[in-house]
Length: 391
Ligand SMILES: Nc1ncnc2c1ncn2[C@@H]1O[C@H](COP(=O)(O)OP(=O)(O)OP(=O)(O)O)[C@@H](O)[C@H]1O
Ligand SMILES: [Mg+2]
Image 1 (cartoon, helix red, strand yellow):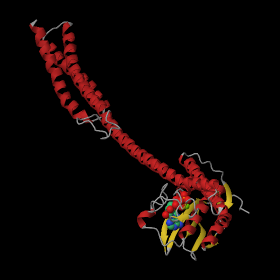
Image 2 (cartoon, protein in one colour):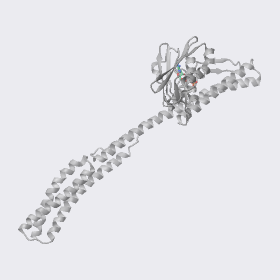
Image 3 (cartoon, helix red, strand yellow):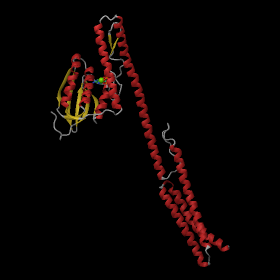
Image 4 (cartoon, protein in one colour):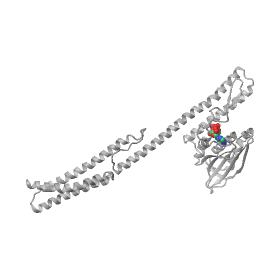
């Protein structure tokens, strides 16, 4: 019995030395790879078994022993390895529980709160991934909030913009019904103008919703930018003549572009109408087009006197239309049918449509101030040189 106790002492001493060496290794590896920690456990197990076996074997040289000795050696070795493995498991469990608790904070208003204690490198990587995901979530939530509030704002503006001319139309219709309109012909013309304007606004809203929903399908074809500008100038000419504004389009290179011509004609039309509306009588609106590497840049320069620097970044926002109050361009009043003019702005959709269509073509729409006015530019993808030149 005494011999067994001595054997146990030898085995415990051998395994204990290996275990004591393994302990700081496990503590040092707390922040390292989990695989490395597990390997260390196995190593410590093997070392402790070997150490205890060697210790007992040396002792066996002095004394003759039976089969029970080996059993005692193994039990001692296993006890130490199990203790080390339990320690490691506890470390892993504590780390993963802390990370699980931290994961519940992903997407919370305060953002992700990383666990305070040390984590293995795998759990630390997971924790930083969760932090990045939480930050992305917060950003997209912020974008969504901004989009939602601008959508709500737009609906409020549009309802206002629609309500006022509708009230005018109703008043004019009632005046005609009651026979109190002094000039029915003028009433009819004004009603027609208002209906056209409302139709245009609804059409713009539809186009914008298609753009924002990503439902704009482009039918690309190779056309000359010269033809596109020519069509747009012809369309804007009556308004320019009415306003006494000169329309110049003599610096347009006949470069081919790969675009949806209907949509780009709409873009150019919006830019020209804005430019004509913003330019005083006797002023000039100039359209130019130049080839630049893989792009064709079309510019519309007006004589508006320039846009405030802080407003330049906002002109393409949906619904933005300068500092003016949201009052429709013309408000008919009954029963006289007199029309009050409240500035020269529309619904603020035109440039949002311009940017949406141009970006759907993988192009860019920009604005900058130039001497005496401002210059809107759209960069469109040039048609590949291998294709046949446009007629
Ligand atoms: N060429 C320009 N020169 C000066 N200011 C401009 C010009 N184009 C646009 N703006 C300013 O940017 C605002 C937004 O233009 P946008 O075309 O989006 O809307 P809008 O012309 O007011 O209305 P809509 O185009 O829907 O009829 C305008 O109200 C105007 O204040
Ligand atoms: Mg406009």
